[in-house]
Length: 364
Ligand code: PLP
Image (cartoon, rainbow, N blue to C red; front, side, top):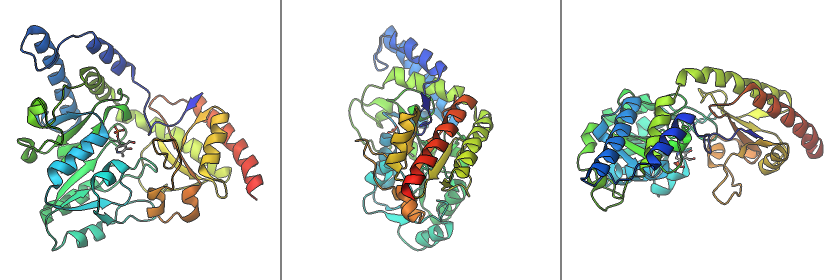
């Protein structure tokens, strides 16, 4: 089996696995005052420190959540209340669902947000919260987040960055980007599912309005007993990240992409700065789900542009926003995990070439 669907979930890093197992053996609720509780609290606060250091925040400004979806929802709830919402056209469903009726910020044919349009949208209107992702989950397109942050600052607007896909692959730094908040998810960077975090700028930290109330955890900003094993694994994965190693991943991705192009594929979003591990490949005339099934039968796991939780393939709003036309229904996402090898890429290339030869003949 060749797993090339890292943007859905990354394989667990060994450091994260060890940290999860150790934390599972620790009995104690971080809120308890006794020794077991204090040991759990120590582990929780160590994890908070490590994530803060890695992603450019103060420890007290890291709020643990159940994952990226909740971190995004918390950002919109806490930072967007009473504000006009402006969201990038290619944002993930986690943002779109939490921002109904938002104004859409258009993107160009490569999926890059139009900053002139943002400037116009910000001019004159009531205070806004802008949501712009660090990198797109379907195409890997990297957004000009630091530039958007500067525009927002000048206009008195706030910027929330969904860094779920970018954080493990190009790095992310809340303070360095100049954003107001940053959403992270453990399982997208080699940690376990079940943990995420919202990092907020110091100005928003104290008294941030919780989305989930409860027992006062996370300084009253997120109720519920923290999922300590998942959080420990999250911090271990984040510490083990090696963004420099991503250059090797980019070379493997490029090999796969060039071979697919030679077999008839059209890459989408490849003209923009992209995540090193992602390519979005359209095969004209062949439906995306047909390609996913054909590759799966050949032992290669990839996904269609937008697979929803039921496994059904829906038309991709990302590719539609880029004006991909018919190709939007004919694109698959190939996303290399942190541990991808040359053998994986050879297997993909062989399977893709024989699939394209077979299916393109049928489509013709
Ligand atoms: N944001 C982006 C860009 C994503 O790709 C995803 C998951 O695919 C999410 C948010 C949601 O993260 P989680 O699965 O941790 O809820």
